[in-house]
Length: 599
Image (cartoon, rainbow, N blue to C red; front, side, top):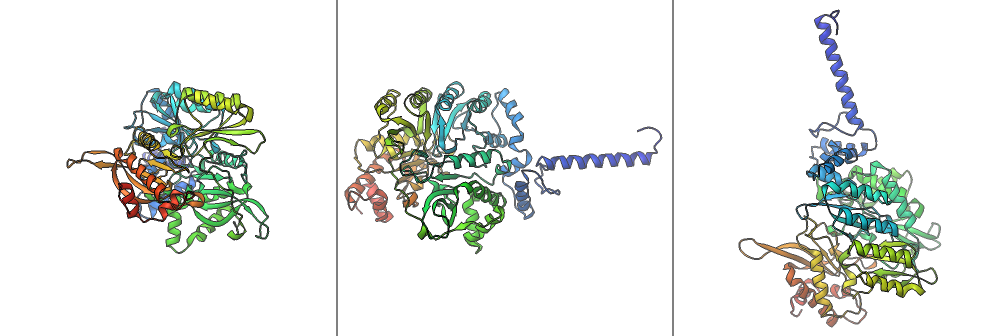
């Protein structure tokens, strides 16, 4: 300012300029989806792809509620705007503090201390299918930048573990180099999209789920609004194949059904819509009475997620899943129809409803169809289900499996929700050679009825939330019981380390939930479990009942043995399932069987 202005004029101009700069700064923050760190609701109306989330946060604040830390962290700095910070931390070989540990999960990176002083990286693989080149590429990355192994998860996905801070971006960017992505694989996002493991090859399938899972996958990747939900969100497509997809354990399940003539809609294959599954909270997905044309599944899922964005709880992480939105609607007397009305408003049209009597019976599922050799619908071709001990394989085994898929099969490897994989497209004349190659890799394509249904989460060796070493204990249970019990039909045994229930213990015939068990008056503890029985899924969907608490891990194998022997001795006939046997008995009787007594 020059000397032509009076002191009063100078003060006026200085104040005016300061006001303009403050307004510009505030507008810039709003455009970025940011507000002051006080957590106060924004005075400006948010715009842009993050606006629905900011509006939901503002509504909670204005209602006098307190946002959870994760919502504050997203509000202060959106994870996708912080890649430079992640890059800087990697350059300094520095692991993140809690806010950034949360943010980096948007890139699939989980800092898992104190279980391991390292990152775990989770991928996104729509319908669980990779090419042999991608699979061997993951093996190479795991060996070069991780612990030299990978785990198959219960969402037909892969995880790489023991990644140093300095190698975080080498993993993330290396996966992109081989045509894979980790974007949104963790935190408050839509997780890996699961689909029918035998999509396109199943002999009795109703529909090939691959194009629908793929469409939803890419829709998510290209819609920033679909990130930063109140909590994680699961979506699954079941095509009616022999291998269960567990769509009823998801927030949204699309279940292929055949509709007969006379139902008021075009006959043929549709998706039946089920909502709100979260078995860790003892709830399977609910029937809605809605059917969806397969080509409209992405639009319907998008509308459901957008209602969840607006109405999910951002103040209580324990209640921040779709189930609790549906529960609130029920408690308020609006019910499921009230929620669906909100979906229809987002969708811009009515959903299609149909009387269940017009839906034909679905093809039968086979609980052992994910293990061993099975004919495909393509003449002369087989798929081979390979057993992976509690989902683990080392890099050498992964490269061997990749080579088997390329040499003997169609080049694809299909991950399943049962923590194993399928090699598809094997000509009958080459099947024995493929089986021999699997054995040479130190794996097998055969499994007992106990091991075929054995599922375990990461456990305390790799997850700070787990109370027990689930993978090791699962192996101990299988080894113990295989030597003492011969089953003639499958029994599912699920071990999960905490209430997040990644291994879905509540749908197992026998489920074990990790717990710390006191062993003396000084409160010293050892690994242990609470034991539940009688769970199920799909047509036999049910939540298991607890029969024992605070069982030491070393006592679990004989308890499982006694339950299996009680089942074999007391079932009505050879066709009765373990679940049906458990349903015929009250919890005290089942507890007595487990403890070695009589009911």
